Length: 52
Image 1 (tube, helix red, strand yellow):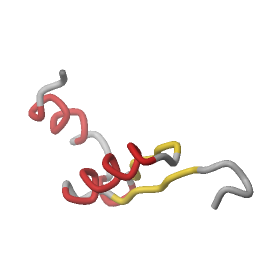
Image 2 (tube, one colour; image 1 turned 180 degrees about the vertical axis):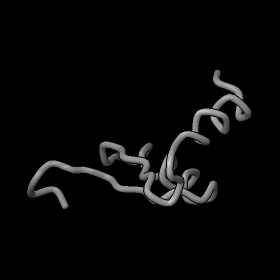
Image 3 (cartoon, one colour; image 1 turned 45 degrees about the horizontal axis):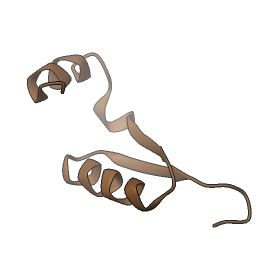
Image 4 (cartoon, one colour; image 1 turned 90 degrees about the horizontal axis):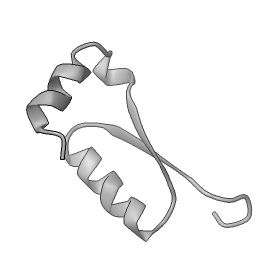
């Protein structure tokens, strides 16, 4: 598992306000999005057309 400090160091090279966490929509993806939002990230979930 990647340590939080290592991820924070990588993120220093990015414009944090422009980052988005993207996932393929599923029940598990909802948990990922929830955690990402708690950490201050915007999220986007992609689904198959017609399954909105």
